[in-house]
Image (cartoon, rainbow, N blue to C red; front, side):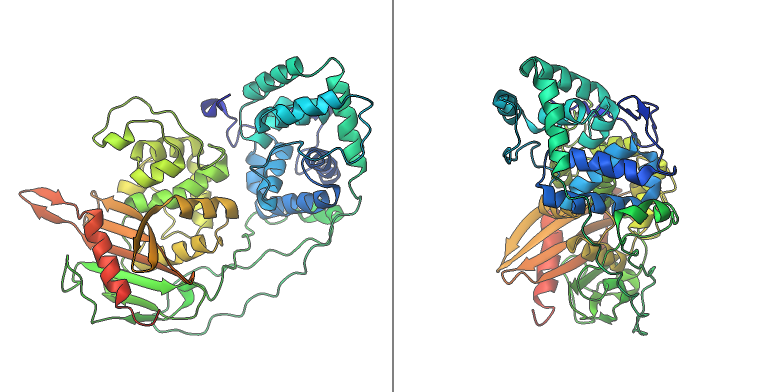
Length: 496
């Protein structure tokens, strides 16, 4: 069954339907929430993971909650949200439910129940396990499965029809049995890393907020004490090598390019990921000039959309609204993955409205993206609003994206880079995103992305140039023209 994304519970819609076996569940701020969350998550994951793996996944979910307490409070259901966070952090988000062998669990002759579960798709099996086996409410399961409570109800009704008469009782017994096989003690947390020393003074220093990793949690029993003590805590995001924004910048006066030979109204910036090599730029002043990001913002927009749960994955399709637009490739259903490649504006505008202003602002700020100002209309602030980012700022964002150091699920960051358009040349691969800020002052064309060679070295780049005007009309450089600039300057950058 296709998910009803329009009806999914949105962040901020807190539900009063937060009970298990008729007992009101504690809110995240309440005493006892950690014990309650631990038990509920342990039995939910007991149907999906080996017993020894469950405590670590639960601990990871609660660490996520400590890092993003405001997101937990906005969730339609806190336990369902924590389940989803644990699945993401542990890398099992896309895996089927109830796929383990019985491990000697006595099904009392009801092996047919197991067979029925194994034959279900992951959404239906997940709904059956969480609601029938774990006694979760439809709202809890909906948050965990990133679907709507109505869809969960439908999936559970279908599962009841498929299961034999004793199926629900067997599922409940199986959940209890599996929970008993989960070790009581959680895995130990890693020690708290010391804060990094301040970066030394650099040539052309770039302004950036220094972020520190949040303290690790010693054990699950102390989570509740510290879970909501710091709403402003930032997530760990080390990446690899010195932060791009802390490096020195070297201006390459020798760089030229075919669109603007003197580089007077263009810039190109390049940085190697995982090294301390300086940033190389053509036209330093232009490289540091904040400009409208236009469709290059779709990269961060996608991560914020996924984080908010508006769609469940980068490949989940959103129905086309039926409005015919000037680009034929836009006029169809799109996922984030396909929408990134054709730059389908309507898709990202619609999903931005679903995210809402508060979550959008929080996402932009947490990524330290440009000036982090979403002033203007929620569905176009990156096209004609107050958001600005420089070419050097793009490098900082792209380097964090390429190393999964942004405060979003690492798997989403990997998927996003893989979804970008691809060009190959002379033993290296360019993954890129275009942008055309036609309403900017000046109107600007962008090309940003990640370059990888055969040895898996990585660079991030950002190119922008003013659009020319001919007979009163803007002349937008083609993607091929922009790629030609990237090829030429990358290949003359020096030692690879």
